[in-house]
Every structure is written in structure tokens, then in C-alpha cells.
Image 1: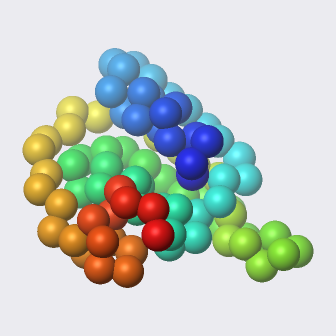
Image 2: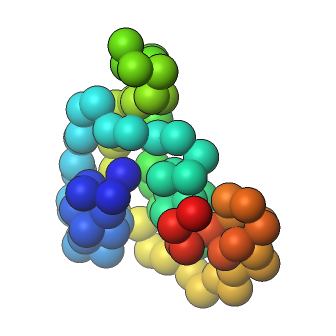
Image 3: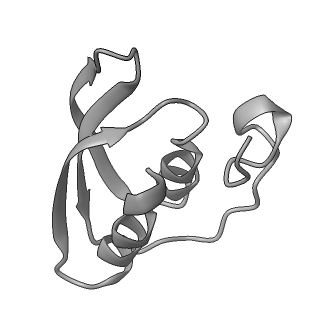
Length: 87
């Protein structure tokens, strides 16, 4: 998710956007951004979930524009940290 984060957020914010990313790492430590955006009303779908030969979970991600609402992170992200903080 790290290198795709900018594009995911941009597609969520820019009207009429539709983005499809293939083979993005989605382990729990990386997917916190998706969790926060979904809580804010983002339209994000994960498809074709699979695991690489090295055991890393990956998926294809589809993102469409959405009107987001404010969200106060509650620390329920990874390892008790707010979801946007890397482990």
C-alpha cells in the first residue's frame, strides 16, 4: 500500500475517478490506510486476494471517488496504534 497510498487517496478525492491497482501488498500493517478511508466513506474494493511465494498477502484494489466524512481515529489500527501509523 505504501507506494500506492497517494494514488488511492487522490482517486478517492478527485470527482469521477476510477482507479484499479494490481498486486498491491495488503498485510494488516500496510492496510491501515484503507481501513481509515473506508470508515470515512471511501469506495474501495479488494479483489483477487492471494499470497506471494514469500507469503506476503496481496490483492487488486479498485478505488472510486467518494464524498468523505470526518473520522476521529480511535487507535484500533495495527498494534493498538492509530491505523495510519506504520508499525
